[in-house]
Length: 176
Image 1 (cartoon, rainbow, N blue to C red):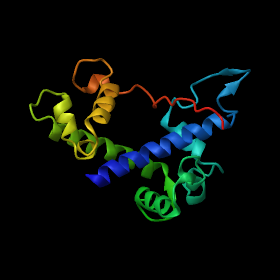
Image 2: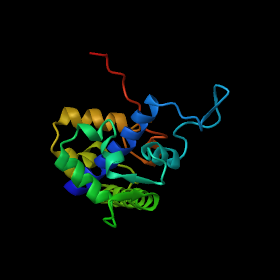
Image 3: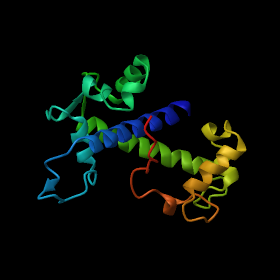
Image 4: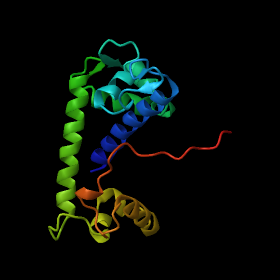
């Protein structure tokens, strides 16, 4: 279970770092005449393309490590994350490896959700949610805060309808 949570968090870090990096650079492929023809992160391939700094169709270890969030992690953590994502061990992340990682993470999340849904209602109550291995370790106040944020429709259960429609919105931090 710890591995599942760590893997999910790592996948989120990869996506978030790509998105943060994408905001720092202008992309000539998405702007024409000052207007966006498509959202900069409207397609999964766009995220991959942003990380692929040299445009060779793969993400090297250096490109991966240079992501704004990834570069803040200790080197051993970065190595562990990269090794886990690099399924064939060739030292690069291909589109297919990223696609498979996303598919596997989605399937594991579905299995975990079903195992926590004790009453088979199709949703997780706060009590069911709190039994998850990762969340059970958190203080109740923190669990409640996370649960309420995930229960976007306020129904008292986390269901498929509560699924986010896009990447998480980050609060802007004041400059130091």
